[in-house]
Amino acid sequence: MPFKTWQCRTCGYIYEEEYGDPGEGLAPGTRWSEIPDSWICPLCGTAKSEFDMIEL
Amino acid sequence: MTIPSDIAQTIIDPRAYADGKQVDDAFAWLRREAPLEQAQPEGFDPFWVVTRHADILEVERQNELFHNGDRSTVLTTIEADKKVREMMGGSPHLVRSLVQMDNPDHMAYRRLTQGSFVPQNLRALEGRIREIARGFVDRMAAHGSQCDFARDVAFLYPLHVIMEVIGVPESDEPRMLKLTQELFGSADPELSRSGGAAQTTDQGVDSIQSVVMDFMLYFNAITEDRRVNPRSDLASVIANGTVNGQPLGHLEAMSYYIIAATAGHDTTSSTTAGALWALAENPEQFAKVKADPALIPGLIEESIRWVTPVKHFMRTATADAELAGKKIAKGDWMMLSYPSGNRDEAVFTDPFKFDVERTPNKHVAFGYGAHVCLGQHLARMEMRILWEELFARLESVELDGPPRNMAASFVCGPKSVPIRFKMH
Ligand code: HEM
Image 1: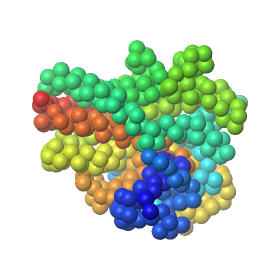
Image 2: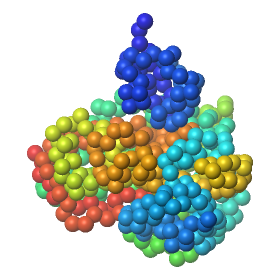
Image 3: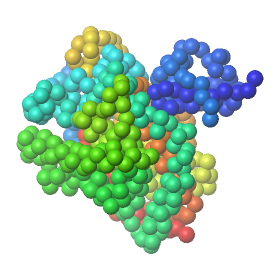
Image 4: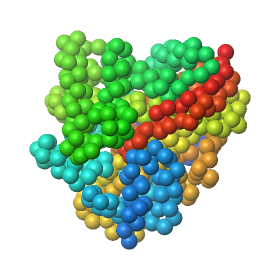
């Protein structure tokens, strides 16, 4: 399955599955579906449900 | 308990922010002894001082419980508040930008320009911003071996970038810089419109109001132009955009320009100037970045934390609430102290050390939550490009006299950073 990219609607933070976010404890390759629903945007605190899938 | 009056005086005193150490010491004391208590300096309504990183996030995350617009969004005296309300038909604000709005308006107005400021759309500007940055690096080189980095580079570069983004012609940039400095520097005798710290509330509010009026006159003309000749700039988005199917209100449109034209450069300038000041004082940090440009993003985050150019914003509780074990009553006013959050010992090891390798570096200098800085990605990108261009040529830098900060308790940073340098 190809990697996808998600973006926070509030602040524009981008989560790329391929690169993960090691600073957040998310290893490269971590799928969006594997991140818990309680996770919030590391830049602005917006809920995971308020992210959109985007094409870069 | 109420915060002791000497501490309360210090954290609102523009000169203490210019000094730096005075506010650092006061906030360090508060974080230790009274991390969330009320202050009531003479002439002010009481307000909670939110000093801890975690509590700042907690307030900002709950943007329905803690509103921006119900009372003044910046700390203001009882008398000044009264005067503003008289002038503005009961509203505590002279402008109505995103900062003064709450939902549903906030989200609707923010959506209008948010797309312009997300990383993937900013990428289109990279080449042009690099050209601008190179121009400033060339100008610095042309100074020889000495310059005032704040005045000669740091104030001008972010100004030029944001004015191009908005669509203000280069010939008007000096005017925009002067108006911005008059607005944020109204308590600094060297920068204020009256040429001295205002002696009375009337003078203070009048001079801020007259700066706002000048901005409005200017941007009104730009709006009229863009309605007839739309371009691909932010001014055209504001002039021709719609919110809930209607064109923007006049005050809202003017306020949108004003916030972009002020917050959009002064903060980034302060951070850039403060970064070079810190690098000059910490040659080992300079050497690290020089040897490994991959540390530039670390330098940027650390300098934003270090300078924290926005010193506070206020929030107002919309209902009784509890925060960190304290009872906050409906209507209470709260000061979010970003510099304090960014020196919080519970989050940052050795917070008073400038460390370009600090990881993680989750500072709150851009705020958090629904109002988190709209321009954060632009600010980072501008600084990254400038440092990439400058580090490619700069061999050494040292201070050439004492740097000085602007005196302000809302938005401020260095106003003069004299340096001696070598570059090729
Ligand atoms: C290092 C540079 C900057 C710093 C430290 C900074 C800091 C801040 C802070 C602390 C806030 C309030 C956030 C909150 O209430 O949670 C803010 C809001 C804002 N900033 Fe920045 N800023 C910077 C650069 C910029 C730039 C380049 C722009 C360009 C457009 C900009 C535009 C705005 C706007 C429009 C808001 C209001 C957002 C809202 O209320 O929804 N800022 N900024």
